[in-house]
Length: 149
Image: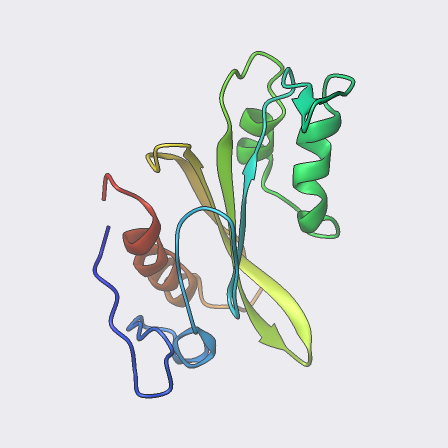
C-alpha cells in the first residue's frame, strides 16, 4: 500500500489528474471507511448466518452489509462476485465518488478480498464525462487500499 501524506489541515494529499477529486478527498483507506470521497465496507458471504450470538437466515447479513450502498448502481461484474452463494469469505467493496450539488456522484468501484488483494474494479461515468480523469483518480485510490499494487 502507498504511504499516506497529510497536509496542515489533516487531510490526506492525493495527486491525480482530477482536481475536483483531489480537492474533496480527506482520506483514502482500506476496510470499513466513510470519508469525503470514499465509502467502503466488508461484505459477509451469503452463507454466513451468525452475528453476535444470533442466527440469521442465509443472505440477511450480506444484504445488511450492502445497505450503505443502497441507491447506487454497483457494477454487475462486481455484484455477481458479491452475491455468489458459493463465496465463503468476506470481501471489501469500495465506492469512490465526488460531491456535486450536495449529491454523491460515484465514479469508481473496487472489490478486494479480505487480505486486500484486488478482485475487480470498474470506472463509471455519464456521457460527456472524462474517463481519463476518473480512471486516474481510481488508479491512485487503489494504491492506498490494495496490497498487490
